[in-house]
Figure 1 (cartoon, one colour):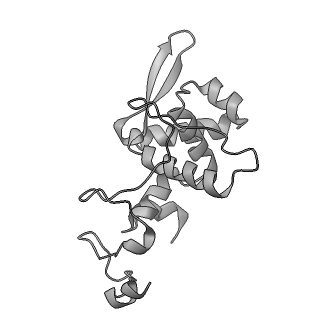
Figure 2 (cartoon, rainbow, N blue to C red):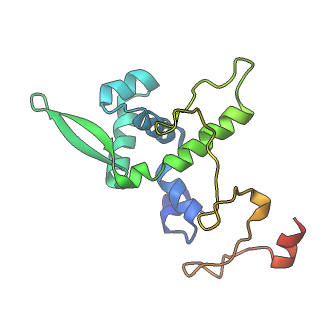
Figure 3 (cartoon, helix red, strand yellow):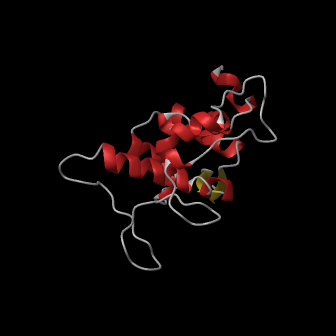
Length: 165
């Protein structure tokens, strides 16, 4: 696989990585979910160069993850707001946060707590089955080719092998 053509792969992970798969993009998205919207705010929070930030924001706009909305005419300045496509990245971002909380937090504990507005409780993101709503673990999932699979590159363990895992 080549970095420039990941978006053409018959693999949902590769296609997603082609959009969000670098450290700056993930940190920009983190800040978007924290309601940071303006170029100067991103730059001061991240310490990223103006060139790199402009490049990443343009890509996220081009991919439909963010939309640019003018908030000032002279000079023209924009806010970057998550689209529905961008908001749909929330479970991915929360999974990354949870992994970091479990495996990378130091003795002080989690750097950020997430509170559910509806019930008021702090929570851990949990992946559940969309049909039965039971929690999912990696060993409880079987993988099968989908209609968009590239059968020439498909490498999946047989159901017998998956059952042994």
